[in-house]
Amino acid sequence: MSNSKYTREFKDSTVQLVLNSEDSALKIAKDLGLNDKTLYNWIKEYKKVHNIQTDYRRSPQKATPKETSDEELKRLRAENKLLKQERDILKKATAYFAKETL
Image: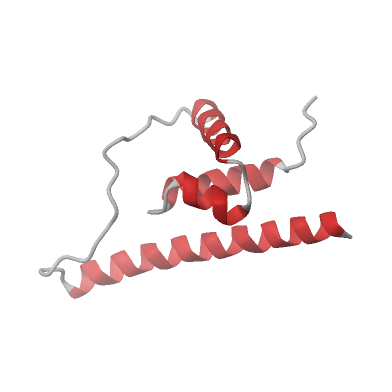
């Protein structure tokens, strides 16, 4: 039985943020106040459980000079989705750590 101070939901949300974000896992761990090795272990476990292959060629999405309105809208919607995910995770982390201090 695991004696973790983090819930499965928090771990999974954090890993999904890393996988969908342009930020590094190291930066996200720092932002959430996590040990980076802990986060890397969560990512490794998540990928193993969900049979996800690592993509080492992942590059950030940037606007191109020849981007059409539809392409820009699609890119901005994806970015908006990611930002909402980040916000929700930070809200959960804030609530979690606030609960700990009570």
